[in-house]
Amino acid sequence: MDEFPPQPAFPGRQALFRILLRLTVIVAGALLLVYAMDWAMARAEALAEEIGTGMMIGAIIFFLVVYALLISVPFVPGIEIGIALLVMRGEAVAPFVYLATVTGILIAYAVGSTVSYRWLHRFFADLGLVRACELTLRVGALSGEERLDHLKERLPAWLRGVAVSGRYVTLACLLNLPGNGILGGGGGIAMVAGLSRVFAPLPMVVTVALAVLPVPLAVWLWGGGALAAE
Image 1 (cartoon, rainbow, N blue to C red):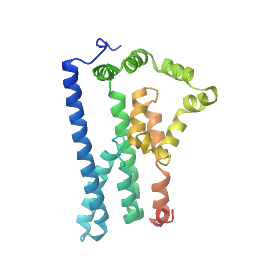
Image 2 (tube, rainbow, N blue to C red):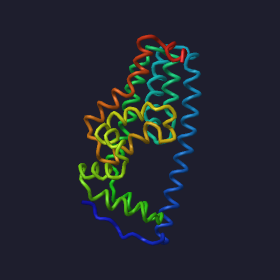
Image 3 (cartoon, rainbow, N blue to C red):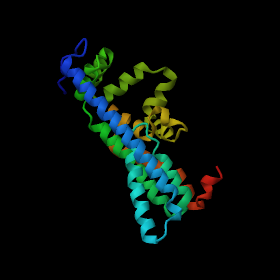
């Protein structure tokens, strides 16, 4: 069980310094991601005009790596790069976009699974978020089954079966939900799933693999026109 640091009533000087440092890193990282995504999108749009098969294959591989990393970041709409590649290159690139999408979402899940509740508690304590600190204390001390029971108690009766017993189906629906960017996108949703510790690795892999399959499969079977028709 994690040992948690004392919970401050108000952030001290060291806590304020850590907050400022974290905010600086977050802002710098967000700006870097915005520039990286804009650059990747611009290069993806120009991909069709590139001359040379070798250059095109290398560029596609590079964009897929960028895409996998971007889609793993919460609230970053990296899916746009994958859609652009599917529209332009069609069935030839569909399997690779699919693998990159699955990889990116699972990276986010793995990151969430490795974040400790002790670190979260300290982060919320630095911000003076007392209720969030109390939540990490309660949840961090629970086992997986106890967390599911805790979730059941906090949900309306009609939602318990869907959100708890059918949590993998619910997760798959959220990953495919239009506008899920307000929930953090595929990366944010997967990261929270990992952080909850109630999604086992193997079922999670199967869920993600099936959830992101429809669009790449449609393009692979019917070409980029399957997206253009939409």
